[in-house]
Image 1 (cartoon, one colour):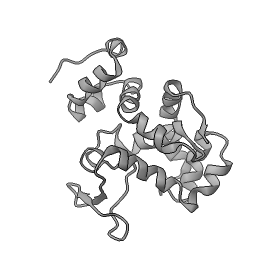
Image 2 (cartoon, one colour):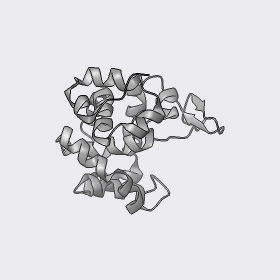
Image 3 (tube, one colour):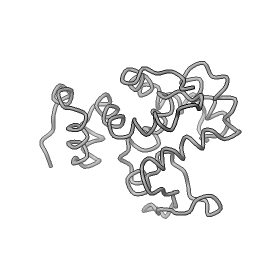
Length: 182
């Protein structure tokens, strides 16, 4: 394993250097010792272009959707994101998905061939009818996320879900200062 670096050292790295370095740190070390700002920068450097491309014309708030995927995929380092390109915690349904990956606990997760396909699926899910009100009427990323959860995106209370990603919404917004992507 490479020696651990400080936040100041991460800030001096190019995005390419940062991704290369952090990809070579095990998940436990990444989760325990890398600061949240650096983790968000890593995720955006690695996957941000796919989100920007996929979200155009959707009325979704970029910072909210990326923060949602960060939570659901453990900054792109969860087993389901690494092994199944699943960035939204989508469980496998044989009537919808063509492939799956089984977790250690036997849970079958929907699987896509590439990260871009997995991200496109996350956006496609949020484009479903059940989330239309959130796309049209939300005035902020935070409000949109709460409305997604109220519409059935997750089973935990909307305020609890939002509290888990609110800091990352702000971090993403600092790096990608876009609002709603029309």
